[in-house]
Image 1 (cartoon, rainbow, N blue to C red):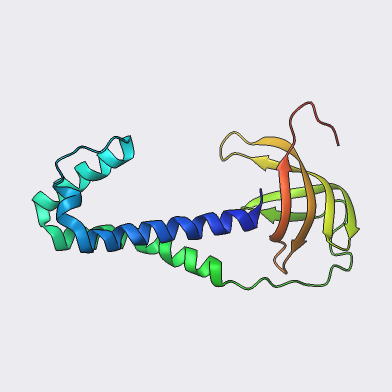
Image 2 (tube, rainbow, N blue to C red):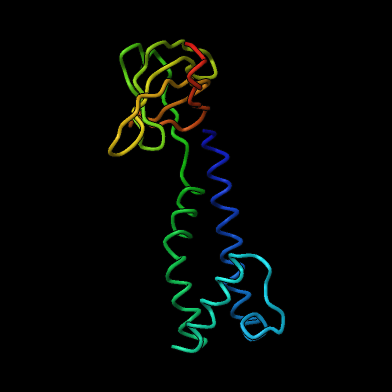
Length: 164
């Protein structure tokens, strides 16, 4: 789980979605009423949705509803982009038996070493909502904030054949 990479993927997707909404404002009629049918499944479903919204409530309200649906995603992406990376001193904050969070999953530390780039080691995480499964993870060069959330580094789930 490269957290930095996911952050930029969300931002790029937001830019594409926002560009699509602007394109709808500028070139709505040729997109909705074009002579050729789109080839992709998602494009066909989007065009069908636009046609239904257009017939039911009109151009302005169709674009307005799509904008309202996309607004929370844009807002979260902007907040992710603007959030500051607070780094605290790495003076033995984590040790064996402690925990940290990655994507709302709590990782219990089984083996850890502190380096100048952050912490590296192995741990266990319970994944799933109802049927929780314990998985072994390897983390490398992670840094945490004051809430014990990972702000940089990589955490990967090990296959069953790999050992710690």
